[in-house]
Length: 480
Image (cartoon, rainbow, N blue to C red; front, side):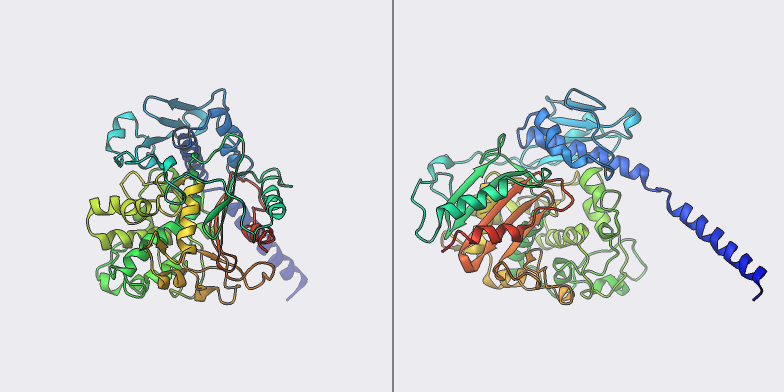
């Protein structure tokens, strides 16, 4: 090839590459991103005000700090006002409109928490949103001893617990070197005994905050109850009608996906969250913009063989929850199932399971609860699935959620069935530990070898992220 030909080839390649780079630099999802951003603020504000009973100033300083920076484009308005509206009568928050992009509203609903509406919906649509009328508590929980109630007797620490080391672990949790790591609550149980409880200013044992993906482990527990009863099978077809529909649904390759694949985050379906679309499309439209959680979850193509590749996807959890709905068969039974099958049975009386506006549980993230209820949840697992002499989940199910997903075998065996496991590369914490974990530092950690349950709540917005295994490392120092 002559020098001239080489120069022409190089020029053509350079021009072509430059045009592709220019094309790829354009944000085709900017409108979606603004829509989701507004809905995210509306939901956080609504739940902050009416589920957590926090003041708007606190919400802007802490809950909404998550939205600062380039990732979300900042917070709309301030505690003094802006392009948002708070309606205390309707218990609603609307964010956007005008230069802030499309307006999205979230409304508090009894028994559920705040439900996000689709753009264009307004006050006249509120009556169609789901709610759950629960009877008032039959007893005063402050008079019922822990763990079924909230009366905690002040007792000396067990001999096996080093008080100084316990306090040091607590201080390590609250006094963070990274200011964006904000611990709001900490509970430590030893042999079921509540040995340490601490809250940041503005929070107490009644304060309900968002679990984020810790909800996935609650979802897995509800599903496990149905598997134990034989109403769901880990390794059989899900019975889901996939979208878009094809002429011969029986030939759809997605029929090979099982409940095990979904719970192991190994469905093989096209990943949305893992390709940087988490706050743009996919599950985000259900979380923050009023779309159906079920419709979007069923509308993904198969890109890998099920069970072979690990992708952390909210939609995989939502598909498993949809399979739970199909197994229950009746909408009213489905709507009451979390309450009757789990929450009421172990005293999680402050927990709200959120839904989308179509009455479907968003059990991949949208749960609001307090620190003590999560401690009860962890204690259920620490006690082998038994609560006050009644079996809630089987030991077989607990073994399943603690078994590494086959797709993680070459990655460190860090994930089981909607629970996180200690990675192979970690040798400074007990290998038996496993954790429910969610964004912004929500952790329920069970450490069987030391008979511990650790719950940490947070409003983190750091890039590094609070490490739950570091917390375990510090707490086990207090167990002699």
